[in-house]
Length: 120
Image (cartoon, rainbow, N blue to C red; front, side):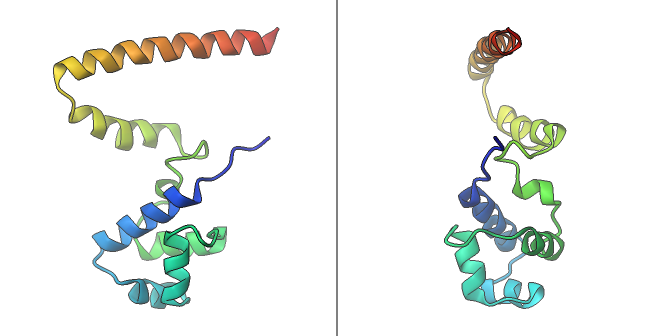
């Protein structure tokens, strides 16, 4: 079974990238050949964005497709580590980093146990 795409998070990332480029929904719609209402529906996940439209949006917003999928299992592992996780860790104080490290140890142990169970 394939993991679901979180269209709400994809829409939020589209909105964030659009605002960073200082584009209105109408401006972005013009760049990709659709209406501002369609952009609005994509950003709010009222409409599931197609791969074709996501490709156009990525080009117009100067982003890799992967950027929009960071909250899914389809994201590239290295990008997730380098851009999302590293940025969040850089904002943590020492105490929080120690707690995160302990949590990662527990999660990795759980992952190993799950992998072993699947092999049996």
